[in-house]
Structures are given as C-alpha cells and as structure tokens.
Length: 336
Ligand code: PHE
Image (cartoon, rainbow, N blue to C red; front, side):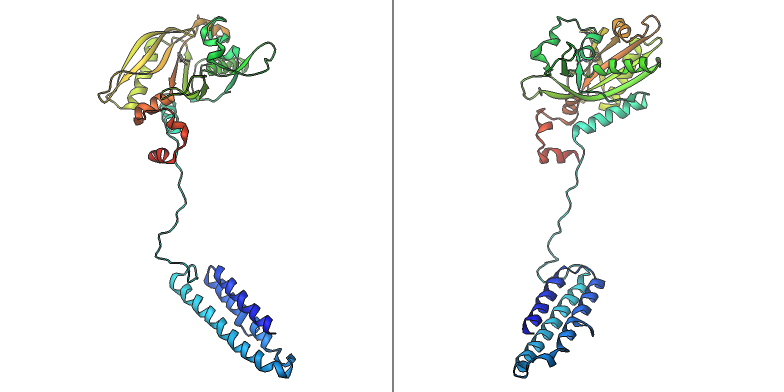
C-alpha cells in the first residue's frame, strides 16, 4: 500500500512535467485527485490494510495527498501565468531558441536572376545531362578530333567507352545546344526557338582562387530566320544593363570558338571597375546547324555561354571561388 502511494506521487510529478495545456492539466489533476481518481481509489482500500499497519499507511496517505495537492497547485499556478510550460526549472526570461532559417546560395541567386532576365526576353529555360558523349560535347559542335580541348588532361572522361565512344562530364553547357536541337528534330519541330540552359560543367583544373574543377555556366541559343549579330549584341547588352545596372557599358572583342562564326567575348564595365570578361558568344556555325539537320541557308542563330561564378564574384565582390563551395555558414548567411 505504501509502495502504491509512493508510486502515484512519482508518476504525478513526471506527468505534470510534460503537460502542455490547461485541458491536459485538468485531466491529469482529475486522474490523481478526482473523486474517482487514483488517490481516492487507494484510500478506499484502507480497510484491507492490517490493523497494526493502518497508522503508518494513514500517515503516508496524508503525506502523499499533500504532495499531490502541492504538485497540482504549483503547476497550476505557472500554467495560469505563462499558459505554456509548467516546470519550475524553465526560466521564461531566457532568450528563446529560434529555428535556423536557410537562404539561397549566391550561385542559385545569380542563376535565378539571369534566367528570369532572359525569360522576360522570350527565352525558355531548359536543363540537360551533365554526363555526356563526345558527339554532344565536341563533334556536333565542330570541334575537330585533334583539338586540344579534347585532351584527357582537360576533361573528366568516364570509364567504359560505350560503342567506341567515350563519355565524359561535360566541359561546357554548349552540349545543350545540340541536345535541344536534336530534340527539335526528333519531335518534328522547327525554329524559331530561344533557350537558356544553366548548369554545372567540369574541367580538371588545379583549384585556386579563380579555378574550380566544377563550376556553372549559362548557355543561350536563339535560332530563327534572319538572326543577325546585331540581335546578339542587342540581347546581351540589354542583359548586362539589367543584371549589373543601367549605367553598365559592354564591349565585344573578336575571339574564336569552333562552334560560332564570327565569335566574340563580351566585357562589362560598371561602377568604375575596369573591363571584365563575362561571356563568350557568336553566330552559330553553319556546320553546327547542319549537324542537327537545320538548314543554314534558311536559318541563322546566335549562341552565348557565361560563367556563373565569375558573375557572382563580380556582383558580390567575392575574391576566391572556393568560398562558394566551402559551405561556411558565415559566408552563406550574407546572402540571406
Ligand atoms: N562554350 C564556350 C566556353 O565554354 C562559351 C560559348 C558558348 C561561346 C556559346 C560561344 C557560344 O568557353
């Protein structure tokens, strides 16, 4: 009997600690001290106790009854005051704990902003494979078999050539030009189309402040009748002013890419910084169009590819590309 009394005291204490609202508190109080509660149940059985033990049991009953009343009045009070948690141990004047709110990665922010600028210009975002074959990364892009860009030291070739073709992690998002135009052909569609394709690319460069073996590019492609270099310049200039600000100046320098002719690199100048290269571009080479069964007599197009880390570094003043991938929370928090 004495054991049973002690037991309900312990239990009442434990259960009172986890009660979270007034209703549960009332129910609990009733369970122990109510007319049909556990304490009443035990006291009703006092007649079963041997006469010589009744005195001790009676004393214990009084003690436990008092203890229970104390438990419930104590927790009842703190419940009334805070309406929340009812233990004496919790200091409600302490600062609370807040769930950590996440934020978008700076590279995600840049990709989203660039994509939305081009979407407003009528481009549609597409996403394609990171593991590619040589046709999509090189052949169809007019990159000859002996071109140094194919070197195994400059690419992550994957094991097990399939049908004599080696697969690789794409070294440029220009693969998506071919992927998309293949799809246009397969689905019996035809130009015009305007696409923007953000994604990861891989090159086995030694890591330093400006090189990473994985980085991001955003590819653009527009094919239609009578697309000219003037359209290319107009679109990219519009983009630069939207992304870097209305005062931004752009300049095109002649360059070479096997898959565009003529080709150029575009630099931007803004906020008193010097000329900074942000992308490569040009008119889609007729051989590229032919490789995907688009008639270069009838159609022309432009393409461009920009480096996302580069732009993020310029825009946010980040000095070391490695910061994007170290996941240091103090760095990432600044973009919240
Ligand atoms: N793929 C080129 C690079 O990685 C960039 C580019 C894309 C150039 C499209 C011209 C046209 O450097």
